[in-house]
Length: 345
Ligand SMILES: NC(=O)c1ccc[n+]([C@@H]2O[C@H](COP(=O)([O-])OP(=O)(O)OC[C@H]3O[C@@H](n4cnc5c(N)ncnc54)[C@H](O)[C@@H]3O)[C@@H](O)[C@H]2O)c1
Image 1 (cartoon, rainbow, N blue to C red):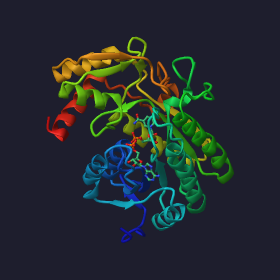
Image 2 (cartoon, protein in one colour; image 1 turned 30 degrees about the vertical axis):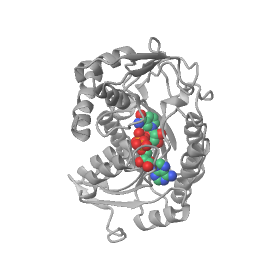
Image 3 (cartoon, helix red, strand yellow; image 1 turned 90 degrees about the vertical axis):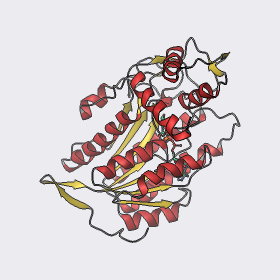
């Protein structure tokens, strides 16, 4: 994969120069692979890295990577971000214009209580990325944060300026720590950082640990599904293509703003659908699409979960002229079609 890393990074597109080189961490992940595909289809060069963490089935990650590997302009390096020197050397050779940092241990539930499972990728990994950026100096860093930073008791809809110092999970605490690190780093190093607070992303090639995926698997297998605090639970489900559209626009805007010196160094954006769905409505929609009903087991709320997530997307709309809006029934229909095909059920 070393071959060709020194190619020019600028290409003239429709009469203007366009940023071409994007390094994407977590490129075999759900979001990383969708975003990489989109960037490649737009003619950009992507260097992806991933360590195929076994948090969920690495075969799915390898299958996602298969979709990218034959795309023109794509290169991949299997690497753990904790190998800071190796990551820096890769960055130095590739010299990205933009770094999109998505690699992390995702998910708020942590039944084993293992804190290092989050701290190593989410804290040490973040420092590896910042430290390499300090030396290689990309024009922009965009990184994944989460709706979970709003934590317990935040008023809805969540606005980016709301309190975010009462995380309900250790995962959320690591994501908030990333935001504070980015705030300090961007000021010290004069490299703009964009934090993207994603709200429950779903869609084809999604994550098996998330409820929409495991419910689909269980409903099709005729197994009961466990509903935790079903009457109260509401989530702001955001379709993956909408999230990718928002990310791409934020990248373009970040680069344009940097060129005109107009951008603040660190900015945070909610990327959500701004339309929370009750858990019971969500399950009904899924059952309708699957043409099956599942037996339900009602359980109390799981540790780390909040009852409601709801994005205020005013800032996002003002920045990029776009907000996610895909209807849950349409988004879930695409997911179900993919699921049946991928799992041959
Ligand atoms: N999917 C969502 O609903 C959602 C919501 C909020 C925030 N996020 C955040 O968005 C980002 C992407 O999420 P996703 O859903 O694609 O998760 P994902 O688990 O599918 O993708 C993350 C990828 O990072 C890789 N990775 C983990 N640790 C690594 C390391 N140390 N070195 C190299 N690679 C490593 C994993 O193997 C995986 O492929 C994450 O930072 C996540 O916390 C996602």
